[in-house]
Length: 310
Image (cartoon, rainbow, N blue to C red; front, side):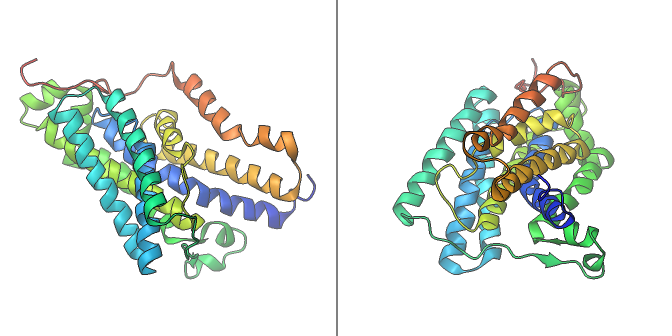
């Protein structure tokens, strides 16, 4: 344990924790805006897997990380359109249709990988970009300002999303639709259009989250996300549907994951103990859901379909 408590290792663990938090944060922010409009998407994991494969395959074939990022956004957006049609136009039950999206994403990503790639082939992943001046700061610069571009994007989206939700007419519509869709409709707000937009944006961010994971690891394999999407959903509840709370939760999960990896690398935990410690993120997810299950504050119309005149 003394090896872990050195300054260099602790700084490396913190920096790694921020990187590992990024996919959680991107997916959870997207889910936040969707839930604030009254739509629960349990298919985040499947969308992340498809986004991850899209980013990986595009980068593998073209050597363009930028194209890989773009493809992950497009894949997520397309899945958002599909999910919007299923839940809004067809009025399908959100929980069941979300699980269907997850199963579809899990199966299709694996099928495409087996048919188009076959064996895990590494790609050049995202490189770190030092922020001028800030990157030269002692300790803080090394931990925060030497990260890849999607890390910066994810954390910058936190204040952006807060501003959109709380300080713009569109954000007011989102909150109104998520709380009292009937009242919003009576005031001329299109409930379905607002929800279509939030579903599209939320799924595009989930696709980007998967792309961030694949491009960070520089590889794709079956079930690459390994529960990240479900943890992202839990983070929305943990953060009380607030971007800042979601960010705090993502950091907790990222730091826990980074600490576990560092302990395994240093040989602090080995064998059975390492397997047990590796379960910490999953256990933490369960604890979060138990602790927040009694909290109030979720959008009143969450999971409730809207029909004009009812």
